[in-house]
Image (cartoon, rainbow, N blue to C red; front, side, top):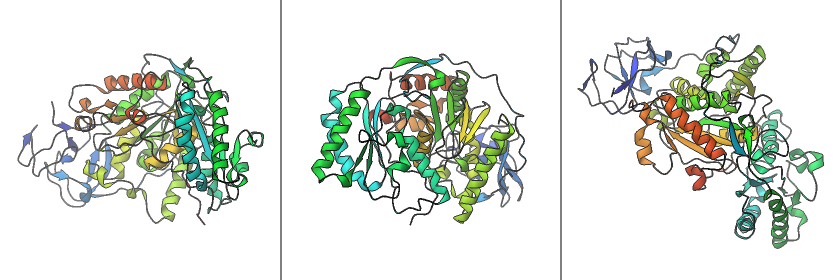
Length: 502
């Protein structure tokens, strides 16, 4: 087993598979300092101002001379200028020879509204404002105790609680983002077409903004200010939920083509192994899904920004390329208004895991998209109109990206991690993939798929990617559960709101 991983022939650094003590002699290299697991070692002398290269890409420029065998960390590199999004080439790297999937169907819930099928059968309860959360949570607890056992075909009851709705600039141009997200979430495929909405009555985000006019009926909407006290509120919520649950209980899984499946790819708590084990495995599974007809979304603007020109080359036409460029520009401006740039992204844990800066993180992050052509680019929380690989622009924050992808229609998410996170979504199952064996050993009962054997030479990307594909189909079909779903590890919904709060 090699103790160093070099990704590209032009790389002048490699990462350590295991911690390397100072003085170690390895593969013709003398290690000058203790090098933590997943961190970089210089494979040659790198003079001041010279590029440090990994993935065949310049991660940054040496701020001081680096000797062969030195440990390279985040304090040693000057960040390069981000690539321009003007006049990016498109359509020059269109891969159509994708790996064949083992199956091309799954067992899902046909969506009465058309579009993607559900992977779960859930009563989703939408809200117009955070003010109703306290009452709704009490009601949902009562629903789960008293109503849900009567309807064995319903998986769960999920309140769509959020911090939006009032004290916000509802007419600001960028208010369209949270409004679009909440409108799309109300009709998520896993909710089976059953609308249940709880409003307060005096909020800025009105029921009329959340629902189409035809859906605003007493059968779908409860306004708490119209109820005479707490008990009346709870009774009304229970009665409506009972009616909705009875309808959902009639849903049955059927065999459906993969074209009815929409999967999200996300990573968080990344390390330097993520880009060589977990994310490429997810990318291989993504290619299989796309080949089988499914839709796969990947996201996180700051985590593709430094490789955006590579994504442009995979865009199927100029229109898709131009939308990609527009989303990058929008986010560049959004960060600039906050007086930061993409370098604000890496976390202390990312750096402890060997990632020097956002360039290195981005190049590893992109790997989860596989090699398929990019057929569409979406603004945050926008719904797709095409099938295939889609770039859905979102913030990189796990708890913001997830709800954005849900609003865009994913019914299952695959989440890659190197450092570990118990993150989960209530409205869709989340499958966890870890980048190294130590993570799986630490969290045996939280990690679903271990990509670590790729780093140690015990497995290939294709093998782990195929295992992941099979796991996706099993979980989507209700034949298996991810650990996050089993333990009900559900993060709060954080709806992306770039508009002002008043």
